[in-house]
Amino acid sequence: MKQIPIGTKGSKSVKVTEDTLASATGSGAVDVFSTPNLVLLMEEASVEAVKDYLEDGETTVGTMVNIRHLAATPPGLTVTATAVLTEVDGRRLVFEVSAHDGVDIVGQGTHERFVVDRAKFIEKSLRKTVIHKEPHI
Image (cartoon, rainbow, N blue to C red; front, side):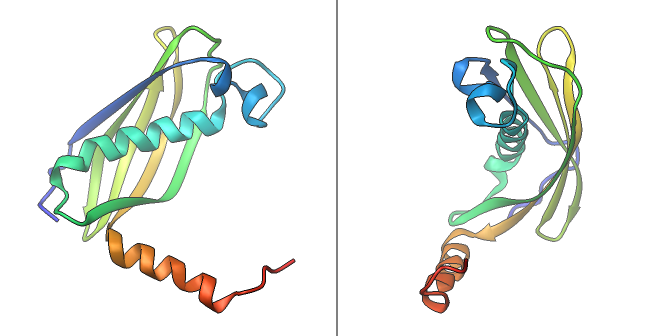
């Protein structure tokens, strides 16, 4: 992993459409931008912030999300999430995340990711299928 400067920023935008609504994602019964999609957008902004600092074979994985969904966004508006790197502790990255819909601050909080070796990470996760051949009920 290359050294990533504190303050590195990334952003990602999405237009609010029928498939991003709380009523469509099962996170509520209203036709506004869903919290799961807000979290996803904030994660995507964080990934965008550091992608150019990763070595071949590296990726980041999300390990913590702590956000507040502050305002409802109806269909047709665009939500833009911004992530600012605030802390680097070895392979641990902490971001301040926020989102805006052109009218209101939609959400804000923190997001943590770790830089991992993609192949080793996948290999380790697949070991679970060997250990647990039958699903737990």
